[in-house]
Image 1 (spheres, protein in one colour):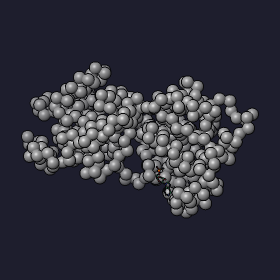
Image 2 (cartoon, rainbow, N blue to C red; image 1 turned 45 degrees about the vertical axis):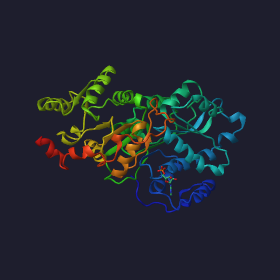
Image 3 (tube, rainbow, N blue to C red; image 1 turned 90 degrees about the horizontal axis):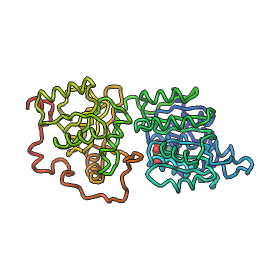
Image 4 (cartoon, helix red, strand yellow; image 1 turned 180 degrees about the horizontal axis):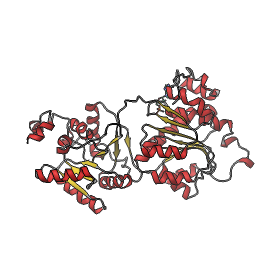
Length: 430
Ligand code: AMP
C-alpha cells in the first residue's frame, strides 16, 4: 500500500492545463486521498489496484490521466488519415457493471474533457436499449469507450468495435461486475485485448474472484486502499425489474453465481411453495421454511440448509428473526418486507465476519415507493441497478403505495400482532 504522504494540490499531480482549468471550474479545491495517491502513478503508466467506493473520487482518478494520455498521444480527431486506424478502434476502455454507471462515467469524462474542445471522443454502450444508435456512434472508432460487458461483446461480434488497439483498460467496480455474473463475459473480453496495455482496477471489496482477476491481469501494480478497514462487510444492492420478470431474474442470479446457501425472503407462506415450484421449472431445487411447517420439519430443513444439502431456501420472515444458523453469504428479498425493521432483520442474516455478505432486493414498479420508505427509516440510500436482459421498463409510472407498503406502525391489525422486540426469544418460546 502506498504511504499517506499525498500531494496537497492538483497542480502537484502533473496534470496538464486543460484538465486543471476544468478542475478549477468544478471547484475541486484539493485532490481526494485516492486522487492524490494514484494520479501521479497512473500518469506514469503504472498498473493500479484501488480499493475505493463511489464517493471517493475514483472516476476522476482514472478519467483525468486517461484523457491526458489520449490527448498527448493524439486523439482520434487530430490523427492524419494514414495513422488513423482502419476500422472501429478504441484507445481507452472502461468496463462497468451497470448502464447507470456507464452513463455516469461517460458524462464525467465528457465534463472533464470540455477544454479539449471536442478533440476527444467518448462513447457509452450498455444493454437495454437498441444497438443501432450505439453502432452509429462507434463509426470511425472512439478514443474512450465506457461499456457494460454483455453489450460490448454484442457490438464486437457485429464488428462495430475492435479491441486490438486498447492502450488502457479500466475495470470499474470490479466486485460488482463479478457479483453480477459477468465472469464469462469478462474473460471473453480480456482475451480480445492486447497484452501490452495499462490496467487499472477499482473495487470496493476484494473477494476471491476479484483477487484472482487482479493476479491474472495486473503487472506489478501499485495498490491503494482508501476505505476504512472497519467498513461494513455487508453489501446491499437493489435491482429494478418488471414484475413478470422477477422469477427469471432470480433464477439468473442463482445460476450465474452458483451460490451455496442463498436465503430468499417472500411475504406469505403460500408464496414460498409457489416460488419453489417456479424455480423448479427453471431447474433450481429450493426448499421452503415457514410457520406452517411443523417444528421437526423446520429443524430438518434447516439442518439440510446448514450442511449444504439444500442450496436455496425460500422463507417467510419467521426465518429473518429466529434462524439459528451462522451468517449466510447471500440473502435475497424477492418480496420486500412490510416493515423497514424487518428489512434490517432479513439482511442481518448475511455478512459473515470478515467476509462479504450480499443482500439483494428485487423490486418492481409497485415496490418503488415502499423501498424508499425502507431506505428512509433505516437511513440508507441505495443506487437502483438493472441487470442486462432484465431491465425494468422506464415507461411505467410510479404507482401510489399499495396498502402493504405503508410504513411500520400505520397498519392497524399488523401492529397488534407484531412480535416483541426480542424476537429470537419470542420465536423460541412459541
Ligand atoms: P466518484 O467517487 O468518482 O463517483 O465521485 C464522487 C463525486 O465527487 C462526484 O460528484 C465528483 O464530481 C466529486 N469529486 C471528485 N473529485 C473531487 C474533488 N477532488 N473535490 C471535490 N469533489 C470531487
